[in-house]
Image 1 (cartoon, rainbow, N blue to C red):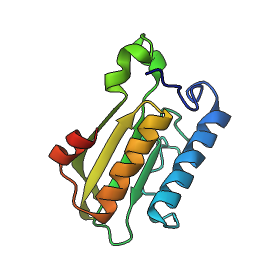
Image 2 (cartoon, rainbow, N blue to C red):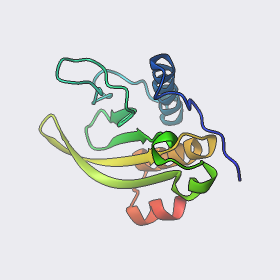
Image 3 (cartoon, rainbow, N blue to C red):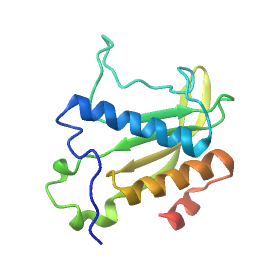
Length: 145
């Protein structure tokens, strides 16, 4: 099945990158029925001088108010793998559980790495919902993907 990349020029155009970040914020707010704040968006992708880095690793991060669960979304660029989207369809999305350390807390984290298509967004939002609202294991992630 042919899939179309969304925001496919994000790595070349800062305006598109920023629109892409806004897309993720709106998607997560809508799916989780939450309001994102400076406290819940925990990682700003910037260098030591505070200058924004536009590499989408991560494109978006979140930690819940109780600091018990976090989400990191890494958006991959199809141009770096030197092949077509169709040739890499089985690698369009992966996810796993990890831990991060933030504000002296060890926080379980859902990490999602993907090429951005409508289908991968749908899968990512399903994983995010299950992670925040239920228990999610690496084994269950594999069955969903």
